[in-house]
Picture 1 (cartoon, rainbow, N blue to C red):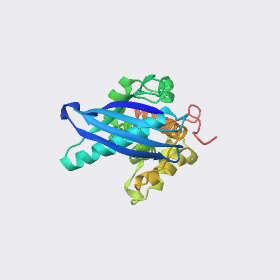
Picture 2: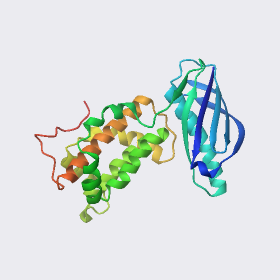
Picture 3: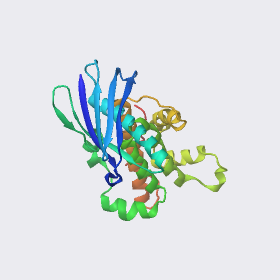
Picture 4: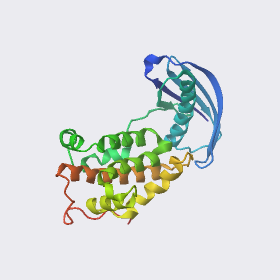
Length: 251
């Protein structure tokens, strides 16, 4: 079974070149293994992946291939003192079918009408009023773009907005500000617990496997927390009313 992936190193004007390398991929948790031939020419990525396994999740395989290419390009960047990003854009599967990957998460895209504020509200009201919201947006972006670190970035996005609830009397203790966040936004501890559970290994350098279902769950929960923070800021930093916002909690 042969899969042909293509993509690009960004910015493309950098003209990155890496000679063909043969690398083994063994995704024990995901249930497949194989051999990848990776090359980069004029910042254009080519990966030929051969495996004897069948019924591989295309999105999972794409994530593993992209991580592999990213670490090679990161090594190149480390040696050259430059910063690059990587994007795998399409694949041709063993049946000759081409799939072009999107830039979003399907479940989040389908729920876009659930966002409580408009683009104009976010740009003109929330961003100017909250210095903690800007880095949270960056973490949401990276949660989508970096599948292996989704837990880390989701939790950090929530931690960014938690900083709004920190006061001097906390004496560097985090729990009081967490409680203020939960009380103000009407969020039970159980809603955030999975974010912490997945983030702790990743923030300490561990490479823990996450299924697609886990990633989607974490992102959906994180987006809901950020939704409520946006409303809170937009309404002048007033606690969300009980009759309008039910408590977010584990069902």
